[in-house]
Length: 286
Length: 280
Image 1 (cartoon, one colour):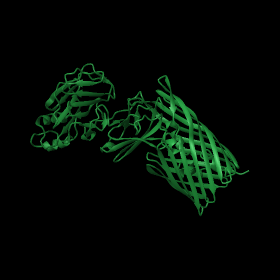
Image 2 (spheres, chains in turn yellow, orange):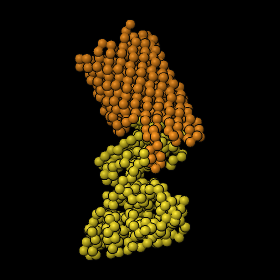
Image 3 (spheres, one colour):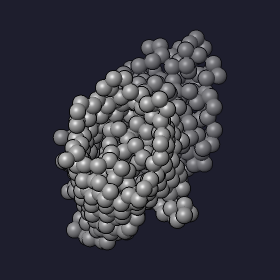
Image 4 (spheres, one colour):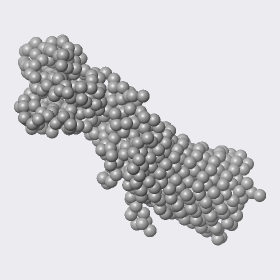
């Protein structure tokens, strides 16, 4: 049985950092395939990057697009570069289109100052016409509904270096502002991953072979709050580690030592729900 | 002596040893050996109770986890007992992309033999157990085994009892196989030091225990109130968080049925025990 990603495009914009040096965009792959020729745009329909061709990716891959660099693309590590100086960090719409020009995914953010950027507002209209965003008015009319449009986008009013907007669940896409959170950057890592049945991957988690275990959860509503914590217990109830701000575990305890082989229980707590399950650890040394 | 325990870190797949399989004992804390009639938990107590006895217990913890134990003993001034325990976990094997690949089985258990001897109001016990643990999946497997020892002592006078035990002394080793490559592993048994006691006021039994392990501890206290043939029990375990425990026992001639329900942070678990005691 293969777990299914619900509501998801085959590749999605997963995290955006518009105030870094350099800025970057992270993409998350939901389906295996060749993504050569896919194009990334931002406000005013500016082409930022065309993916190299061929560009074969697997489900679960992260692709990082780094701005302001003439470096050649690092296809093996899925790090792409663009000479574009950086993202507009006030109000912006970012999109990814397939080679035929069909919209695959988009996200908009704003600084919520009541004055929507005219160029980004124009691209907001394109996003709405392509059914890539549920919230907000059908079209932006400059000087008329700026605040309404801004408030329908992901909140970037406290945006700064080291911060980003990212999906709560990697790969989970409902074309809605509720998919997104503002917070510390998690480049290359997901907060939580979405699957129809909660589980951890990989399981067993092999220390020394797997760099981390990720937690797949099935309830995005439960993660609607920024507050959550992930706790790992032994079978007898001894707390091994507590993690916040990340949905992955590196297999270490509070002291920074790898835990011994065995079965552990995880507990994910949000403001409204408690999700729990088992995971197995194989430690080649104990 | 406690300093010895602080030297140990890591708990291995033998963590199930920290869950007391007895439905009655658990209400008073996992270390409440003075209240236990599961011979392997505290052989030194049973020698105050003459005759043959047997207990079978079934624990149900988190989803996919089962715990079955069987205990048989004979005691007079000298006591001997044999205990068997099987702790099984079924988990789901998943690859890095989240695809289900099959089942993971994790089976642990032990076969234990214990001896005890009483001198007036005090008794002493010694036991050993062969313990095994196996985790199997298509990506990797783990297996371990070892010989562990328990030591205990018990004092009873009038309405007061007091006992202590050192559990899981010894060593274990094992191997891990990852994609055909095998390596040996060092296992750290979950060594612990238990202190427990009880006193009885007007047939109401008050019990307490303290368990020290690694650099941590667990405290527990409970009460057992007789109501005709029924014994109602209520207690709490403290281990950074307070966990309530409740249960009851029903006595009928030589038979006793015990039930325990405990809340942990991540789950609740229940244990049923059926005990039989016969004096020839």
